Length: 231
Length: 231
DNA sequence: CTTTTGTGTGTACACTGTACGCGTATGGCG
DNA sequence: CGCCATACGCGTACAGTGTACACACAAAAG
Image (cartoon, rainbow over all chains, first blue to last red; front, side, top):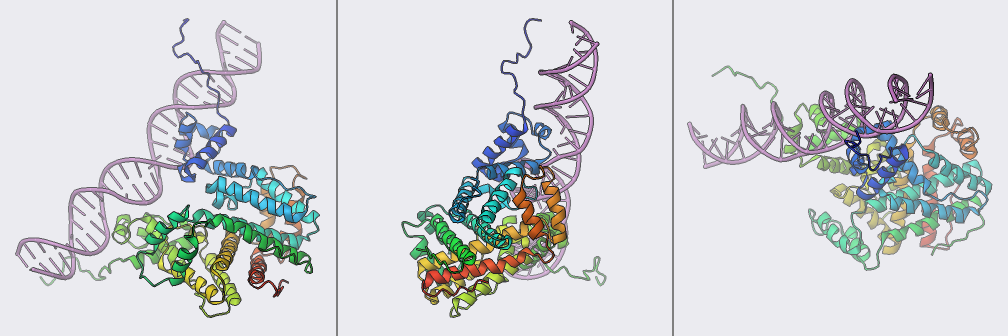
């Protein structure tokens, strides 16, 4: 017959792993990791849930995949670069990526199947430190300290239940409501005199702690040179 | 009648919120947070899932409750104590609690309904710092840095997919298997020359970073006194 | 006695991930 | 051209999740 019963006007471009992961990342970014289900992801791609299993072993593989996509957004530091600015830039790059993908914070370090971008990232950091003269032990110290701080800060930052100083007042009131008035005086003082002040933004704390950590590493590396760039 | 039709030999001691939370904590400690479901928890208490809802509004309230139980295990620091040893002890106490309840790491800071033990803990830390002469700003700096490090370290520590140096070899092999031999030379060196060495235990890194952080805070507080107790 | 209140149960519903089998479109082959 | 293997997506089904709702039964109160 000349008339097709169902004319494939727009030919179905087949799914692939890449498109599945991209859509999953976009979905997680927009609605958080909990809105990423096989059904919503299928809907996003105009496809049933089971179609995804042709391109991905299971949901865990999707999670691993989008976590590695986040790692791939982090700038790699050059091996020959001065370690301190390189580590500072890396820390900020990681922090920025975690802000862009806040659902990823608790997943970046806890996946047991690291992807290529993850491994490449770690390798580049170690390369920079070793080239800069860090012993393996010192590199281990520095790396542990830096990563603990970076991920810890991102965790505490993202878990703050407010966005602006105006929210702080509201949240603090409901949080402290069930308790006696003078039960937590220091906490109340801290909130009213600090967190509720106009210019307050917890994100600013990141740089301060980062400099403390970097200076500490520098001092441990060369005990005489105390740069003390802490403001 | 003298003969009871169904003699309540062991009279059903009624459930209460306390027992529900204790059982939930025990369950999470034994099998991880994912094994804590309303059905398993009911089974643990010899009761149907719906019975729990008489004592708890929903599952989130159970999570909030057991997180606060973990907070209640952390030693409170005295307001008048020297801040540096007090913060050191607090950090270790938090770290120890997180090791005992590793399921809690990602929940301690991310619950938006902090319980009384949580608030009491924060209040005590702030009291110590303020009494020791920290301005509100400096207390905010120090608190942010310390907590970021503590929780960040716990996160990275708990997410390591191995327990002993023997496991490291196995895990590293399977992790690096899909990649070319010389693709990550620094990572391979780090693993073989450091993580796989006999005495290696990542937990030891905690104290090192903690001293760096404490010294950094001390220096920021009194820029002249550089104690440099870093080994 | 009746009535109220507290406590646990059973059923049911809307979700989740995913195992299994069936159709169909596509591309290589004779 | 016909044929067929393969790749791809779909539909159904199942076990598991949190929990809303109506009910059963106990103890206590009036």
